[in-house]
Image 1 (cartoon, protein in one colour):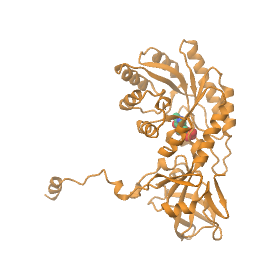
Image 2 (cartoon, helix red, strand yellow):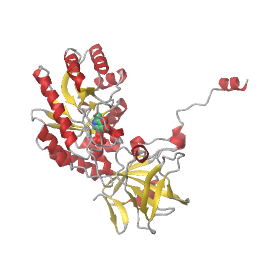
Image 3 (cartoon, protein in one colour):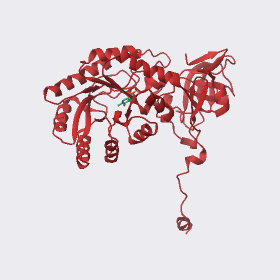
Image 4 (cartoon, helix red, strand yellow):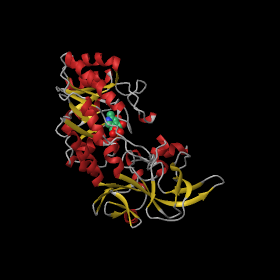
Length: 420
Ligand SMILES: Cc1ncc(COP(=O)(O)O)c(C=O)c1O
């Protein structure tokens, strides 16, 4: 257990979390190297000698220290912007392993990714296909592509993170996919190498994934029959983690089911994010005030929706643990100082905390810091990575001055006009 109480005090690996809070302030994200490594290795071991590529989804947590660990373990990467491509490059990742997903790739992004000679573009529409072909041909090169099909499978997750239904903006609808493949095969700037799909995130049952994988493979087989040599099936990411009472399948079971569903002549590509880094991170915060209203008890924390938007955006649950055992438990809402009623971190929790206490929001390693904002001019939190007994600063806490360092006041001439 990388996050565990020892003598009543919550530790990450060999380090007491309150010592990190003391040294680096709150709110701060704290990551465990060993959890990241264990999860990545679980994927790798589950595939065994089956031909595969694990493309870590950078969107889940793009901190350079996290990417560095994964690059050292030999991970490939899944990106959705050239900003993420730059992160992979800066962390020493192998750009030739990169898969580029996303519905809105721009010409500039295509040029950058082609120059980096990434492994595959997952194409999501006819217009994107045409533009990518034009860009590759104008550069005298060929873009390796997979068509991301939308298999119209209900992933049974929160609607905001469901992506594989016809009503979602993602992927090419099955009815159009044949036409898109034909079109792709006719362009000299494109080399069709795969079929891709991704039905959603925080999936807690295997059946929809297996269903989607089978549908994607049927497409691969269909293309093959038409002379298009599809080499890989990319089934995306999506395996869930155990927030609160969720009970997702293990990495082993999930990979086993995918391997069983797909013909062995296909290379399997997966794009896991949350299931690698989700449980590897916590958000440490201090309770600033307790506030009793006629109907509710609030613990007002120094972390807010700006640090962790998941509760406000998806009604997500994160377990909350006090850093050391404290006062008598009471039912309360944990909220932040941001001027929004949606600014809550947890609701109706039985917690033994009071003003000044430190708490840890668990399972915040994925879609935590990356979704943070500086709304209300709140500098972004520090990120700390723990490796055994060593503590590394993965990102310095932002300063208020950094928030407006790239802004300009009006020039003096404009001020005169205003005054006139
Ligand atoms: C195309 C694609 N691949 C991979 C992922 C990563 O998903 P997860 O973090 O749930 O594994 C996402 C996330 O939404 C995605 O959109």
